[in-house]
Amino acid sequence: MKLKLSNIASSCKHLLLACTLLSIVPSTYAAVTWNTINPHIQFLKQQDKLRFYDSNQVLIEGEKCALLVDTSANFAAVEQLAEDLKNRLKTPLCYLVATMAVMQSFYPGAKLIVHQQVNKNFNLYQTAYTDKLDTYEKSIELSYQRLANVPKEEQAKWRNKLELAKKRLFRWQEHQLSKPKIVIDSRKVIDLGDFEVTLEPQQAHTNGDLTITTNNGSVLIGGDIVDWLPYPGHGELKSWQALLKQYINDEKLTIILPGHGGTLTKEQLKQPLSFLTAITEHVKNNKDQSIEQLMLSFPESVIEPYKQEALNIKSSNFFLQAGLNRAKSAE
Image (cartoon, rainbow, N blue to C red; front, side):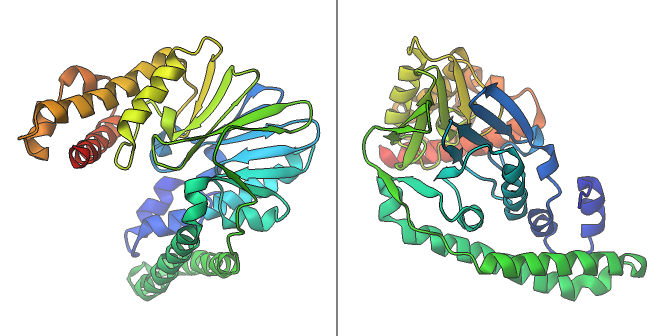
């Protein structure tokens, strides 16, 4: 079922939490584009207007096995991706990186790979999954109550959508996160069948990041670490900056696949490095300023590249505030 976002937004004004219905109905998945990086790598790019709300995915396939990096936060989109993979994969899906219970339910034989820090706190991820489903359930219940406010000619349509959402919710409530099979605490090479990937634990965007390099170091799957507009609210800012410098100076590296937005070059990584460096330096040099003052006095030249369109402006202001808070707490 494919629905236009504009139509949903118009009808949802009579219901509670339109965003919940958007999360449950797979209206956005069709806009994800499959980009062939090379014969072994597919880059599943999220549509531009959702780039800060949902993530890209990367599918890597060798002669014997496939590995999937990340999944959408939209559970219905995850189900659709799982169905698409059945038609696209030439080999078994052997490994999952940074994925969720919904995808695991489709590929129970796939080994979940996580950073050692994620493994230590893995029970929190099951709790977060359950909490998210509880929020969906409450939203659906409240939406049913609000149906009376919807024009009569639209009630049957929305009742059908809510029934579909409820069925999906029941299905998702049956899923459980399977414990990790591979825990990364140091550099690890995995052979997918005449095609190797190298996983490395990092502390940058979070203290439990994983990066993947392949094609003799020329391709980097860096997730949120290499986003052109990075979210620094829970980052390890100094080690993050050092890692970006390492990538910029890596002679082998040519293609960078971020967690959000399109493919990047090493030259483009200078912008997030400049953003993160400016945040730490600004806080260090203005310790007596409040967050509000730091926002106003932040170097315009650093933030200017993010002011080219509305979504970047809105997100960069929010990300800047989060980064300044993070840097200030670390002082």
